[in-house]
Image (cartoon, rainbow, N blue to C red; front, top):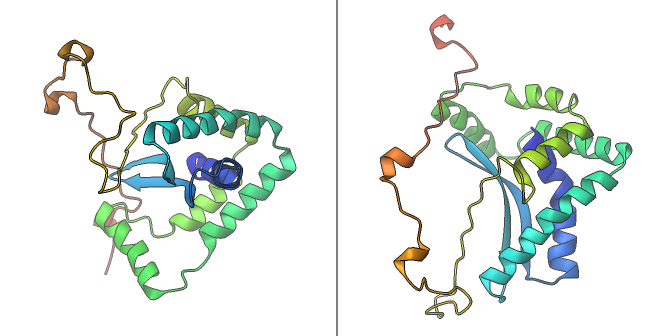
Length: 200
């Protein structure tokens, strides 16, 4: 919930700073990205600028988030909590959206069908200090548990990106461990309901 709340808090500043003020591109947004039991904060920028420049501006914005959280009043924090809770509890407008919601619970084998209600209640217990601590631990540039994945996608008509230098020698590259040995395994999340106890 802290990641969702952080994404809610920075959504408007991300757009205002990176798109409106810095005019990096037409498509600029931040959101939570989830997949395979892992979640992260993503910033997407579509621009004519070089990927390295955009990455630098995204990092500068991430660094700015700490100042934004410090300056945020308790009233503003509560508005974000209320707004996110309302988004979570909003009823799906289409049957396909509701179907996908329940299918995702089945496919993940979590069976947490009342997830929205539980998350909205938990959200109300979070504090501004917890959000700041979460940012310092996982998101800030020097966060001890920060992990970062950057994907640069170039237009088809570009053969290469001149700002990304080619390695001068193999000495610049770190030794690559064998793939299976280097992968961390994420434990499967236990089901919310015990299926064996279910009665038909």
